[in-house]
Image (cartoon, rainbow, N blue to C red):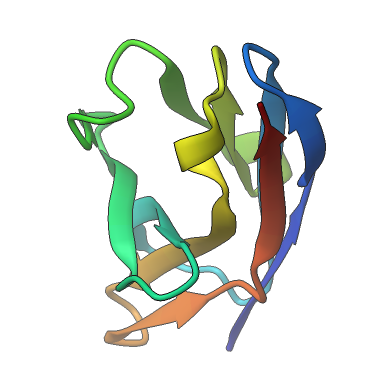
Length: 117
C-alpha cells in the first residue's frame, strides 16, 4: 500500500544541522497527515513535528524554533530540517503518514541521529 523510506541521519556536532527525508512509494493516496517521531534509548517514542494536508504544522516544545517540517508533493517526499542540534536530540527518528484512502498509518524504518557534545 504505502512504503516509506527515510534518509539523512548521521553524526553531527552540537550546534550543527541535518535534514531528514521521507519518501513515499507504492500507493500514497490521500495522505492527510505527515509526522516525525523520535525515540531515544530507554524513552518512549515522542512526536516531534506534524503537518496536516493543508500545511498546518505543530512542533514539540523542545524543538520549536529549531526544527522545520516541510513537504514536496511532486516528489512524494517530506522533510525535517533540524538546526542548532543538541545532544538531547540524539534518537532514532521515524517518519509516519496517515492515509485516509487506506484508513491507517504507515511508518518508516527509522534513521539514527547522533549529536555529540
